[in-house]
Amino acid sequence: MKLMKIAVIDLGTNSVRFDIYELNNDLSVELVFRKKNMVRIGEEVFQTHKLSIEAMNRASEAIKSFSKLILEKKVERVIAFSTCALREAKNAKVFKERVKNETGIDLKIISGKEESRLISKAILSNEFFPKLNGIYALVDIGGGSTEISFCYKQIVLKQESLPLGSSRLSQLFELTPSSSKSRKELKEHVSKVFIKLFPQDLWASVSGLVCSSGTAKAFIKIANAQGLSTDPLKVSDLSEIVNDIKRLSKKEILSYPGMDAKRVDIILAGGLLLKQIAYLTKAKKIYYSEFNLRDGIIEQEMENLLRSKF
Image (tube, rainbow, N blue to C red; front, side, top):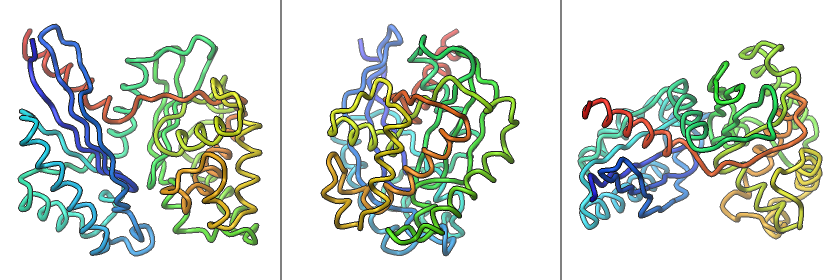
């Protein structure tokens, strides 16, 4: 029997995602609906520290469409949260109030630490990587931040949310075919942030990276289109793809095999970021996980239900 229908709204820097799950009496969980809109709420926010009117309009319209689906599909509980872009926007409160007034949905802004914890919970609760011996890293590259957890078996040793992301770096660095200086500065910036947050004995040599979310998925798709092995994806193959893309204009990137048209303007920054993390950790292999922040939210919800029952 169905215990409850739960909707999860995840407003990230680039996209807003909407899932509906059915929770059963035996405490099993089933994903019954999924939708994604690329609204770019974080457009310009890392330069201006404000959400633009246009970005707020796009995100608001998407959430309004979700609120209609919530009624149609008779959802009983709604969990709505936002991440990096709203954490850093000075006018985030204005947007939250607008969403509340227009839809009745209370949009919660979660901290970077909480985001990192929930992502690792999602992956470690649902997957096991026997080929990863010793320390490995969970890496979730978003638009505004990157969540990294260093793990041993199923144990998290250290996790952080880094102020690095595909949209953020695209906004802060000029990434064109002729901008080799900017690419060098981006890599140096990534290294500086990374080294400041993680002790070297954790990342000196990891057995591999387990990557989730949009940037990783985009490169897996590109690699598959080129007939490359993606289970795991070799870092050397990722490096070759990034080196190809950095020589192309945005128009040329659009026709690159396997390219997602919605990620054309941020794909290079995301690739350079992932490549630099692999370089710093000396990782040779990248494993992709379908599990993400929303799955972590559901795992947390199930734990809360269990506590209330017993």
